[in-house]
Image 1 (cartoon, one colour):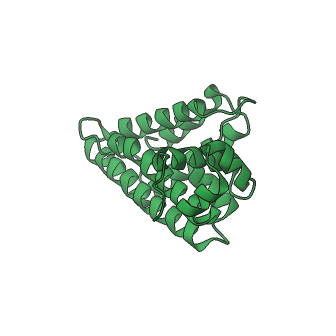
Image 2 (image 1 turned 120 degrees about the vertical axis):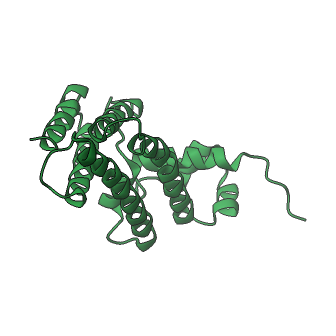
Length: 199
C-alpha cells in the first residue's frame, strides 16, 4: 500500500513556481527545488514525475494566479476603457516592486522569462504561453473597444494592433524592471503608452 502524502502539494507547487520564476528553468536545479519546497527528491519525483512536469504545472499556476486580477481590471465595466488600461499599468508597476530579489531587482514575469528562455525549444511551455497571450490580448481588446465607445481611447489604430502594443509595452516594462529600472522609469513608460492611445 502506498504511503499517504504528508505535505501540501499546492504549497510545494507555489514554492517551486517562485524558484523557477526567480532563477529560470535551466538554472533551477533539483536541489534548488528540494530546498524551496522542503521536499526530498523522491517526493518531488513521485508527485511531479519530472522537473519539466513540475515547471509546466508551476507555469500554469502562475498564469492562473496572475490572470485573475488583471482580468478583473480590464473587464471592469464601471471604469472607462482608458482607465482600465491605466489601472493595469499601475498593477504591473506595483507587482514589479512586490516581487524583488535581494539585489533589489525585479524577478519580472514568469511568462516573459519563459518566452525568452524556452519558447523556441519547449513546445509545451510555448503552448501555455501562447494560450495566455491570446487570453491577455482578448482582455486588452475588450478594454480598448470600451475606450473607443466611451471616447477615452481616440487613436485611429485598430484594437488588435493596440492590444499587441500594450502587451509589448508591459513585456518591456517587466524586462526593464529586471534590469533595475525604478518606479519612476516604469511609470513614465506607462504614461507614454497611455499618451499613444489618445493623441
